[in-house]
Image (spheres, rainbow, N blue to C red):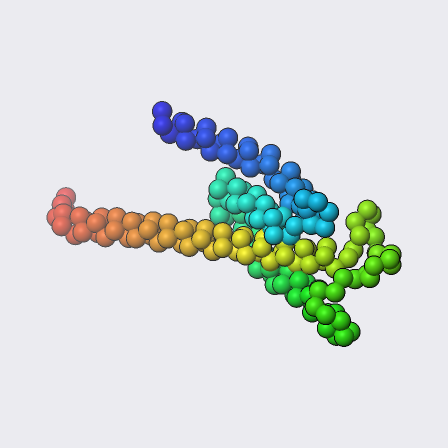
Length: 178
């Protein structure tokens, strides 16, 4: 009976993970781009996206998680986000402006992508999102890989012990010649 409950709970977790994947990413992206008020909140968006992927990993396991490209390249995304955030922060220095100078300046039109204005705070939030997401998922996959490796090593050791015992039993039993 407990085995049946475990299978049912695993099925429920997998169903919930499938259902929450897209809404979780939509919320994470919306949080990054528009935040609680207007500009955005890249940190919260990155945490939400990492938690969505954590749920996927818990539901389907480390091997399935590694098959998702955005998980496989999370460390690269983290460095891209770091470069974007630092570039957004330090680029004004090249033009003699202070750090984090807002572009475009006040009373000038911004580049639009649909209704989204591409301004420096948005670029900075996207960079922060990528850093936080990449770090969170990177830690998750590192722990999952270590756990998977430990399970495989234990299984290999168990098989080796079983093989050694079988060899010892066969060596001790006398052969009967007909």
